[in-house]
Image (cartoon, rainbow, N blue to C red; front, top):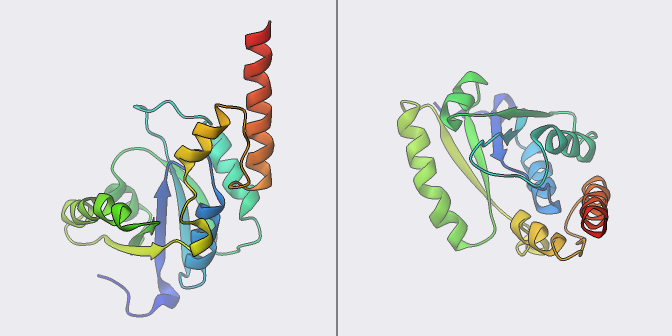
Length: 173
């Protein structure tokens, strides 16, 4: 059952966060204002080849959100609905940049509610206007061409620069 009093609400904000973007940080900070506890959960998906390891992504989030006291950084694998119930959370948070995001996310929201026996609600939070164009896939794509965007926190920017230099050095040798 969804909490009527948000002072007690625990929300899980799941994602691959590969890499963490300023859009992710913005959504987290805004949601932390109305959640008692916000768990930012990095998905460990064995079917994808990430740019950064789960441990690196967790570290990036911890560094970028260290000043937000009610945010907990974690990682998980398996079904989101199971993880949310295990964490004792009331809802899943999903950020939306555009109407297409809602179209993609809505079936997952319905599925998570069904799988959890009606225990898992989903909250959709629209992106701030300055971040509607920011996505991890865009950051990864431009990074492959040696461009480090201003769409990521400083710790991620440094990691992308290092990763690109490592790839460049290995190609040149």
